Length: 110
Image (cartoon, rainbow, N blue to C red; front, top):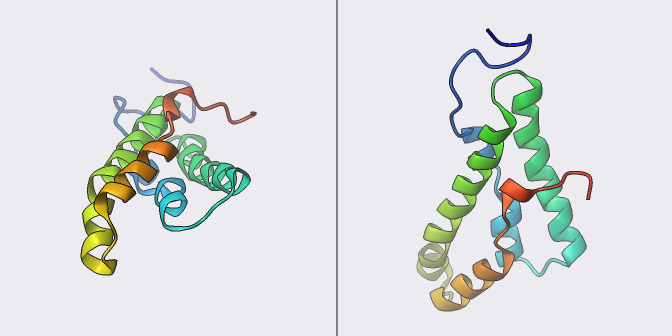
């Protein structure tokens, strides 16, 4: 029913993509320039896209996975950094808000 190389199952968020959310937490815990954040996002996108190239996921599965991973970081990182390093969770949340990225609108050629 599908072209060669396409998944043979319904669409599901890609967990490899969800796990590849380095651009979210690195932008919070490190002092990255906008260019470095963009490079980290390219890495996240490359991990996600490789799943489609392998015929395991649809492109929309990858962006959904990236959004889920980003949200998991947003929900857990403030308390984790507070517990492990004494960070101010409100400051972490503010920083997370500034680095939020809408992967559903990602343009890999931009």
